[in-house]
Length: 255
Length: 339
Image 1 (spheres, one colour):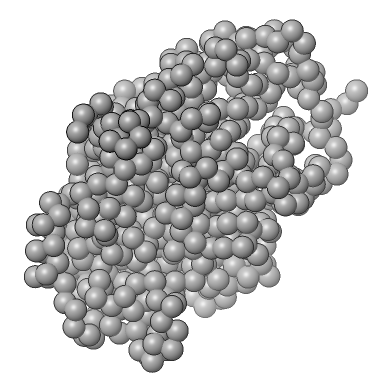
Image 2 (cartoon, each protein chain N blue to C red):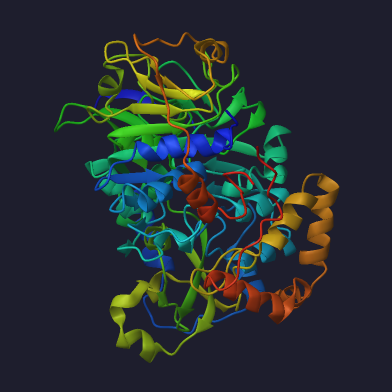
C-alpha cells in the first residue's frame, strides 16, 4: 500500500484526536498549535485554545509564528495577559497542556534547557519558556517530539519541566498540584501513555508500518509494553488538506 | 519558615521593599510632565552600563526595537537582561555584546524559525553568562511581586525540577496548606522598554491586543522608557480612561517612533518582516556576519527613519500591514525543508 502522508502529518493527526470538544488546551509553538487547530476544524469546534501571552479562545486563521503574536487572539473571546492565563492554569482551568521536547526520560521529565553541563553547555537550548508552567499546572500534559535513542534517554541532562519526577507520588511530595502529570507522548513511531502503577512510559499504539522492535530500538530506557498493541489511524485526505491549509508554507508540517 | 529547597541562581533585580519604596518616593514624579525626548536622549539618560534591563512585549512582538538598536548604537556594555521570552530583542543585544549576563525563561530561540545562532554562540563560548533559569510564569510573577511592593510571590511551578535548582527561588512549607510552595523573588528592573501603539506626552499609554507581561512589568520598572507608534492628545486618553494600560507616573520617557517594532510584529498594525529577520539569522551564523549586519543596519544609519528606508521603506511597510491584516500571504525565507 503506498504511503501518501508524512510522519509529521501523522503525528499532528494523532495528537489532534487526543483533544476533546468542549475542553481547554494550552499550546506551545509549532506542531501543538497545528494539532489544536486541526481538532478545532474537525471533531472539536468548541475546543478552548489558550496561549501563554494571553490569547484566549481564538479561531486561529493560520499557523502563528509565535505563541504571542496577533493570530493567537484572532476572533478570540479575550486578549489578556500572561498573568491571567498562567493564574487560570494554576487554578485548574487547563485540561490539556501541549509541549514539544528535546529530551525525555522514562517518567516523562523533559529537557529543553541545555545539552551537556549547564554552565559550559555543548548546546544551549531555549530553556523552560512556559513549558515548566504548562507541565506543572495542566491536568494532562501531552508531549510531541521526535523519537531517537539520544532523545529518549535514561538520564536527561537538565530537568526543565516536571514529568512524574522520580516516580509515583513524587509530584505531590514536591508540592506540585495533585492528579496532574504527563498523559501522552506522540512520536514519529508511536503513541505512548504512562503506566498507572509505576508512572513509566508505556506503549499504547504503533503507527502503521512501524514494528514494536523499532519502538525499543529508538529508546535508551526500557519502554513498558501493553498486552495488546494498538495501531494508530493514518491521516485522511481531508485531514491532510486541512493541515496544509493551516500551514500553507509547510514551515512545521512539511511541504 | 522551613526552607525545603533553594535555587542557587543569582538573585537579579531584587530590592528590599522599604529600600524600593524610598527609591520610588525620591525618584518617580507624580507630577504631570511632558516626557517627550528622542530615543538617543532616553537611552543616554536612563541606561547606564551594567543595568538590569527587560524588554516589554514578547521577544519579537511589540518590542521596542528602536530601543534595542539605540543601545547597540551607543555601545552599552555589561547589561544584565531579564530574558522573559527573549527572541529577536535578546538575540541582537547579546549578539552585539551589550548584554553579557542573563536570567533565562526563554532565550536563544526564534520560536517557529528555529534557534538563534548569535546568542547561542555567545553562551556556548562563555561570552554571555546565564546567571539563573526561570519559567515564563516565574518571570512574570517576579514582576507581579515587584509591582506589588512585596518581597516574593508564592507559586506552584518549578517545584521538583532543575529549573528551580538553577533559579533564585526558594521552596518552603506553606503555613496554610502544609504543602511545599515555591517563593519567587520580586524583581524591579533598573530599566524597562515598552513599545505601544499610542500614548500621550506624559506617558499614559494604551495597548492593543494582549498586554502580555507589560501591565506588571511597567509598574515594577524603576525606569520605564515608552516608545510609541504615535503620540495622541491627553484628552483622548481621558475620554476612555479604562483603556489606559500604563499610567503616566510610572513612565520616565516618551519617544515617538513610528514602526518602532520593526522587524518584529506590531499587533493590528504590521507583521514580522520575515525577509529581514531571515537576513539576520543568515548573517549571524558567523561573528563576522553579525558584525556586518550591525555595521549596515545600526552603525551605518543616522537614525530609525534612515533605517526604515534601508529595509524597504514605505513599500515594505505597506506590505507588512497587508500581511498583518491577512490580506497578503506571509513568507518564510528561513524555513527548512521538512520530510
